[in-house]
Image 1 (tube, rainbow, N blue to C red):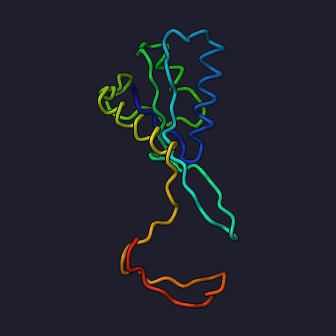
Image 2 (cartoon, rainbow, N blue to C red):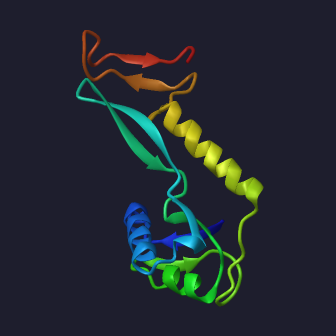
Length: 143
């Protein structure tokens, strides 16, 4: 696994572009998964519950690949890719399988159990905006 630095906000675009370029160049045997680690978050807007995605590592894409000059050049020359993280020149350092597994597990857990977008803490002051208690102030005793 290698970590690729991409323009922030364009991680999914880089993921799709890489997949297209790999298929076009017939280099599928050098590449495995291309992953943008995200988690689902729950937000309530205007009384409606919405689920959206939030990146664990904004600006980074994980790429499972065999490092060769051709595969390195394909990734490096992809639009909106700044380069690889770690290493020097044209030889980046791969992350350990343990670290990759931890990131994959974190992403899997984040998709299975959506988190609230806003988390509250005991002792935090809030103001109610809607409902029967609109314009009231409150204090969290427990969460």
